[in-house]
Length: 197
Image (cartoon, rainbow, N blue to C red; front, side):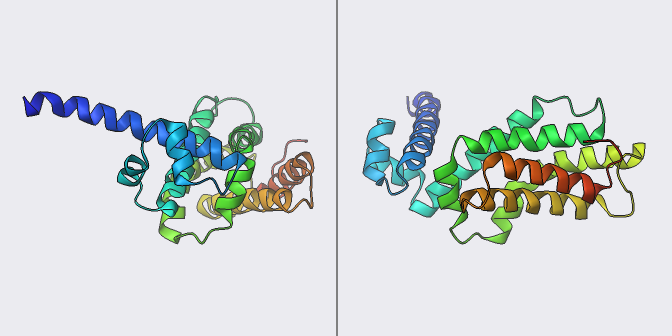
């Protein structure tokens, strides 16, 4: 009897976790200080259920950030990164990620202000970095991008410039469009892209 109910309990736990993350992303994006009780109520679970999945608020925020990253990676994977100029593929990839994160401006601004564990940040960026590296290598092989810098270095620069663009927007020093334009121009120059903008 117990073994037959175990898969149902695991399925219920997965549904509860997904509901909590969805509610947390929605509520924290509109009200960054929303309580765990409010998140639980919105998710249709108890506070105890939230704490069973996420023992602390920082763990909940990290899980929400992981979910946003997964959404961004799914948007990237929907693109055809192997056709057309590499610079166009790279900019489509960056823009797909930006469109996903633009749905959570308040939430991500609050999360970016929290101290990050370097290993967690590296792990979170790994799937994005893999896709960037694939496009950068293609551009270097085809001669579209300067091949004097390593793909790993260029991936790190692309990610850091993306964060800089987001920080400028968060601080209201640039509009979203200004930051996107500056990012595109900067990336073309850094990569040595030999295609016109």
